Image 1 (cartoon, rainbow over the protein chains, first blue to last red):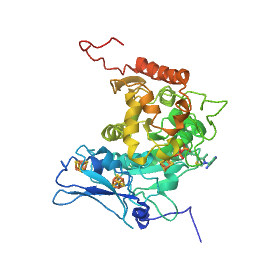
Image 2: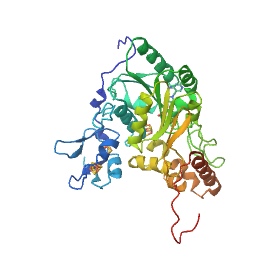
Image 3: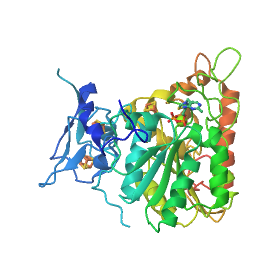
Image 4: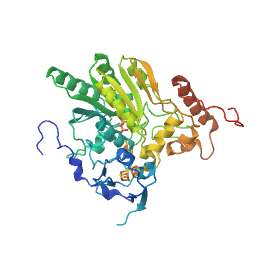
Amino acid sequence: MALNVGCTAPPGRARENRTGSWRVFLPRFDHEACSKCGMCQLICPEGCISETADREFVPDYDYCKGCGLCAEECPKHAITMVQEEK
Amino acid sequence: MAIDKGCELFDCGHRACGGCGASLAARLLLKAAGPETIVVSSTGCMEVFSTPYPETAWKVPWIHSLFENAAAVASGIEAALKIQGRKEKVVVIAGDGATFDIGMLCISGAFERGHDITYICYDNEAYMNTGIQRSGATPYDASTTTSPAGKVSTGNRRPKKDMPRILAAHGAPYVATASVAYPADFMQKVEKAINTPGPSYVQVHAPCCTGWGFDGSKTIAIGKLAIETGLWVNYEMVDGEVTKVKRVVRKPVEEYLQEQKRFRHLFKPVTLTAEIAKIQAIADANAARYGIDIKLPPRSGAEAA
Ligand SMILES: Cc1ncc(C[n+]2csc(CCOP(=O)(O)OP(=O)(O)O)c2C)c(N)n1
Ligand code: SF4
Ligand code: SF4
Ligand code: SF4
Ligand SMILES: [Mg+2]
């Protein structure tokens, strides 16, 4: 591979790596119990939780590693970790 | 610059362990710093998990230095931007090994020369990328692969090096400690550091589930316990003076230690009371030095401690 000045990569190309395949447990969101505090979105180490137009917090399962941090920190206990079905 | 909770400049697809505190630090850092930022990373977990070639999770200009010279690379970038009249901010994000140990010379030089850079150390308290070797940031009695607990040792023999004070002693106008367990506080400190002219330093506690031995869902809980026991103190120093400290109602250090495999030898097969007392003394000294204790009014019938 010809490399001129070091190696470069286009911004955000890591998206090609779908880390959702690592998941053993999956976070399930109870939108009724959710208070829309935004904590899960702020602390997800993958940055894969977003807020939809109708104000529902949803993870992107293509990237969610199932770490369980969101479920642990949700003040409303609105997120439960369930065994992944493969 | 207001903190934009929506923008993701550190993207999905990075290969950090699930629940990794360092990866959360990277995300929060860029949320606070914004798009007009140039990032320099030393060799270590974050560099490896965020940029396995040809992938990158970074959506701002990012450069990998060597393990030891991130501060020198940042100095050069800052000097070049300055001469071109450009306004981007230069931020280093480097591990504790890169910062406390091998990078010391370059950091000291950059701070002494007064470059307008922000140096952030994500402190996971060992050399994680190469298999959990101790660093100058490893706490007393933590078991690592180069300070293994066993028959002849109770783990790491030395206390954590006081890196923030070393940089404050260089005349750094802004030095702060933070934790990924308090994301808003960390982001505010990053913003402040970036907007302070001259070299500033932020050391962010980044619990590492793999190296410390706890479940990745507990990263924030562990970070909070470090602060609640007084083993990690969140503070700000402006021109060498401590100006802000997070105060707590302190818990005994056992509550933090017993949650992590790196301290398991302190409890099994027998409880090493004398060693735990030494760690409690470290927390007590931190509490006295920074005045972190919130004194609760005595409850009726409660025993005086
Ligand atoms: C000069 C040099 N020595 C050793 C190494 C091997 N090495 C790569 S990363 C690393 C440890 C990094 O530790 P730290 O800075 O704490 O980051 P972490 O991996 O813990 O996030 C070491 C020893 C290297 N790359 N270069
Ligand atoms: S942390 Fe819980 S309550 Fe808050 S937005 Fe997320 S799901 Fe809703
Ligand atoms: S389980 Fe972990 S990776 Fe998945 S959404 Fe929750 S915090 Fe993010
Ligand atoms: S070893 Fe620790 S610091 Fe490295 S990616 Fe895993 S959790 Fe993060
Ligand atoms: Mg480290």
